[in-house]
Image (cartoon, rainbow, N blue to C red; front, side, top):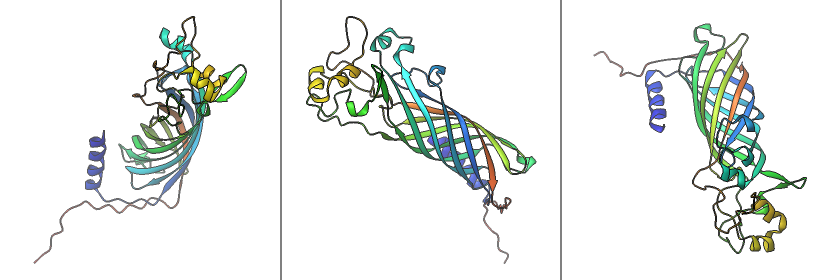
Length: 282
């Protein structure tokens, strides 16, 4: 993917030196979803949540732009919806609001310009980096509990002293694509789907192993013990060291939806000149 992205950049730069003077501000409305230990699919309709955001896009030319965005959504997961019996028996669930601030490069595969019917449509691709805030919670006996302070995998206990409590902030890598359509009077519209690879495996509070319940009880209390192992049946999964999640697979989340934006500033002014060696007459 990196080679492909670099090839697009080089080819665009070699083709022309074009500068634009018009940027965009827009609003996003869509849905958010999650994939991790408590959901096997990134496109699960069982865990869709509304999402909305706003963005500013700097357009360098008809092909390239950079978007700075803030987006808010929700994510959740529940073992009760799993197709695997051992996950149903694990019986864990969570939900969390998720806030993201991102910076992404956009590449239009076709020349695109608002208020120009010659360049009124294009598919596009984006890739970048973001910072995400999350806070997984669950309900127990009618009360909602934040899971990170409860150290449900024995973080910072005698059993697992080197494992620190995870941060509620994480970096992520957004990438995806969609379509842009130019409207009238400086208006434009976008349909897009963006996937995020989070650099944490704790969006859902599930990653490693079950702690020793006796130490957990002494250091973190009975609620932590109850929410660490909620397994069903006569054979609970509370054996210390037994896998609770998979730390080798980071969590993912997604925003999918549409946006409307308006171009700001003066009309595009392009000064395009191919890169070539000048010739001097003798």
